[in-house]
Length: 321
Image (cartoon, rainbow, N blue to C red; front, side):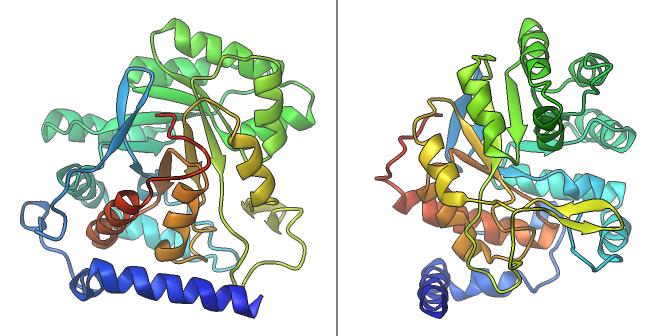
């Protein structure tokens, strides 16, 4: 394990050196306003891929920018800290900064705060960022939540991974097919999310018709990895994080799936450095990566993603989007 970690540390240092010391230092600087935050360090346009008719940037913003979910293990104060920092105005500044750097899509929950911020950002600031909604349908009512996102202007919707995992345990994966059919009937791309690979396996086997999948992926070479990663970390009877149980198995199966794959949790909820997590995800088949970002991380993450994508030409899983 120490040899693996040493190799990954060397890779991280090499990537950092290539991207440039000024990019590294920018992560520690206080950003200016979005209008002032542009930099020649981010010169190339962000590559994108197609999900249905949507053109989606390879780097996607995570919705914890809005929700405040931090998956911070036993550091219980972190979500509150995130929510206090990311006020409505700060979130809108960050959305504007993301768009300026070519990130044209965010994944977020369909809740009152999301609706409030998107409403102000799209109408008040003229923002164009696309919203892929995390669907949170219930077993007893799988239509209402999805329809709210459709009505509010989601560009695409998928059934969120926790729900997919739950329906796998309840033997109700058929509801995934119902949800995808509803979403697609409204002219939007419909997707399926999961932490458990078996959700994706069965969705393909049963031909539920998903236009894309949202599946977590990260390597296991980080010091805080639990001795047994077969279960999520549980704090006061609630799951605080969902680990990638078997990345090799996920990579192998997704290699044969000819649908766009958005990989999330690629940094194991902050335990893995982007210089290690980004190339691991793209090299091993992800078409897009979803990453939670503060405003002061946007420029560095975009520069890093551009650097890695430029060098990720040949991979075993072809680009699907």
